[in-house]
Each structure stands twice: as C-alpha cells, then as structure tokens.
Image (cartoon, rainbow, N blue to C red):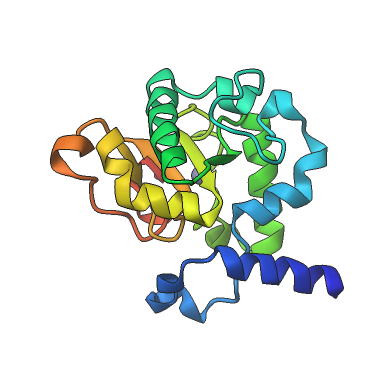
Length: 194
Ligand SMILES: [Zn+2]
C-alpha cells in the first residue's frame, strides 16, 4: 500500500488541475503513462525506446531520442534552448518507442485500468501510436510542459490531447495559425481508428 500511495501522490503532481471537469472525472484516478513506464521499464531496454531518468533532447545516444523525427527533434532543441534561458529544463520522459515496447505499455495499461476501453484513453496501439513512428514526445517536468503550453506553438510544438499535457507533436503551421484544437483524449483522435 505504501507503494500505491507513493504512485498516487506522484500522479497527483502530474495531473493538470483543469483535467477534472470532463466526463471522465467519474473514473478512478488513472495513472498516466509516466507511472506505467517507470513500473515496467525493466522489461524492455533503451534499444526499444525506454528512456533513462533525466534524458534531454540533446541525448543523441539514446534511441528514444535519436529515433525521433528529425524535424520534431530540431524544434524541440530550439525550444529547449530558449526555455533554458527562462530557467526551464526539458526532460524527455518518452520519445520514440519500438512496436514491442508500445505493445508492452498497452498491455500494462489494460491490466492497470481494467479494460481495453479505458486503456485506450491513455495508450495507443503499436499500429497507431505517434511514439512508434517517432512523431511524439512526452516532456516533463510540469514546468517544462507549462512552458511548452505557453510557447510551443512558436516552434510548431503542439499539445494534442487535453488529458496528456506532457505529449507534444510537431504541427509546422502552428507558428502562423496556432495549434489545432486538442482532442479530449486519444479515443477522439481519428488516427487511432485503425
Ligand atoms: Zn505521449
């Protein structure tokens, strides 16, 4: 129970204050991918996309960083450089993932949440995940995601899902037009319907 309490406490820190107003608020508190990833990191290694604690967008030797789309990585590095001037450091919590690693995360989420339907609100399949294609990154800690929420569009970096304030993808038009509207969660993303 101590472990569960600690995980819940960590989770509480990471959930945005504004996330409680949706229909999902009746669901039990659901650990975000951060918690799942930490719990299950040992099963698959860095070659599959597991990222060590404290990884940055400059860590070329880490496959989870190096295998990100080059344009996404370039935008992240420009943003991280400017954020550093504001005293904010980007940490890569997750980036590129192998299909096997994504499947492992999905399996873990299904057992964690109790159903494939609930797991789908947080973890995509290997066929649909933007992490597997190298087009998505999870950035922490919360001050970094807050910085991106304010400034990310200037770099084409957009939050995609309202329930995942750490998950960013490249939307090159965002600099001119702003980021597109967020989906409430991945189940509302047409890319997930495969
Ligand atoms: Zn993500």
